[in-house]
Length: 510
Image 1 (spheres, rainbow, N blue to C red):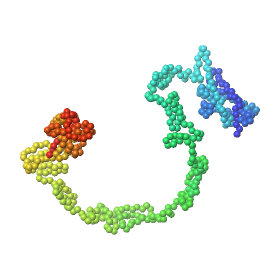
Image 2: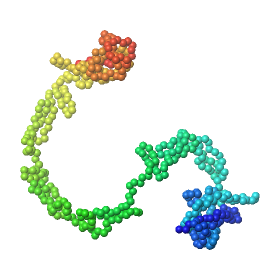
Image 3: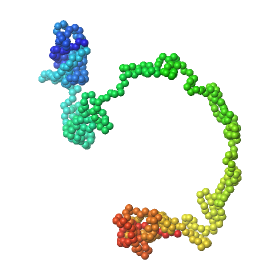
Image 4: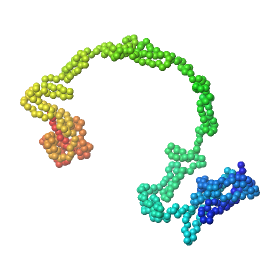
């Protein structure tokens, strides 16, 4: 294919109207030569012009196509760019532009740089320009005035040039360092920090090693190079390039299906004969044991329990088959039936047939209800005490016995026969204060013997520290304990009666 080269420098001239408007065309002059013989080319050719925003790659901002016929021997091209697609201030906005020329589809290199062009709008002393760069005065922004305070940012500009400020709420912290981690390079602790991917050898890619990112070979192992139909068949299509399609064969007769013939898959008639299992169900019938009805040898077969039993009957095994029978409770298998329910001690009721009811028994003077037991005053002559309230009246013969087993008061726990100990430690009292507290409560300050009995029964003392016991400090042998956190033993010893510490009260019960 013949390629061409631009051998003459580009000559550009802006064509403007008498009103000094922004130019809309550029004069283009060049000589086209054959890149092999350097001879001028001639004849008809298609020349495409395009303006880009970068010397290489970039984005095209304008293009135009011209059909030209070159005279033999000179190869000169004279064109006015912009005749078809105008070149205006939107294209020439002051940014660099690069002209790319293509001849018959061959792109000439390099692109030709076109500098931005200043435009002058002339105005006499008696007149004022009505536009700037083709933009009317009403479309121009007034001179910007004003600044924002520290901690604010510029949010907008009013038509008169004044600024709109707003508080900068982006945050209160400054980034002081930017370091490059795995797979990155660059960073800085001052100025503008730049990060980029780390440098690898040509053709390498960044790969994770499981713990970090590192350069590695771009292995394309495992690429499918061809898709073909295997010898068992059943598929058509395949290929070695492009988009490959596989499908089931489309050449079977209507109603056929794919069936394995022992070697390959092929089209075959759709028949229900099972040639693999060795048997086909031809009928469903009722066995001699009975208990079912229905069955058949064709069509949809239905089986069900018999529906000819009398109301309330059940299926029962009679030793030979299943048959309808009355639903009786006689147990002919276990060897025994309950025939009577007789009330024993403390119960009344019972029976030998029907629904049997048992009751809690009650004697003279005792009233038994669902969840309570009371005394009938007709038999007790009011000589008893209620569980709460009431007063003993009259006389009662206790036969030399007494009422005992009084329970522990609220806030006390039983620690053995006849002794209740206060449930929690009480703080903080001197010996005298602790003794008075217990006396007012109707109890007494626990003695060392009583507290040792309480601990032996599982009572845990509080405070979290080692407990020391005080010995006899009164004629009542009362004691209380302290948490000093120093002693490793629990000796009986005397402490000053003014020591503030923990104490518990005890109650003796019968």
